[in-house]
Length: 178
Image (tube, rainbow, N blue to C red):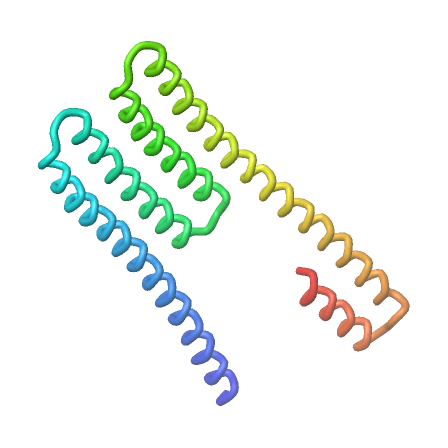
């Protein structure tokens, strides 16, 4: 009875600890997002002293900084391939808006070329992010396939054994590969 109670208490502590860690990670994520918003507002206020396109460029630069900070926070909070793509796409969009704003100072063909280059850079960044996700997914699939194959080999090696030795061998294989 005492042993069961001890195991129950340890389990409860581990569950509470993992829940606490998740709460801390979420709090850090929210704090980073709020800090990014506050920094953006300060940077944007500094842009008010500027005029015309210089002001617009200043605001877009502040937006890029905010977007990068939020993207980094998202990836740090939930490090998934989907979030990496979302973060890279958001940053590419913000950088495109900045580059397009900088093009407004130009005229004629220079302006057209500038905007096309900005759009091309955005498309390349987004394509790279999506390709990175596909590579990540392929690596995960390959690792899973290899792991499953290694597990089957390990279990096959246990077949000649019997009784407790076989059970221990299969348990060891499960612990290593599953």
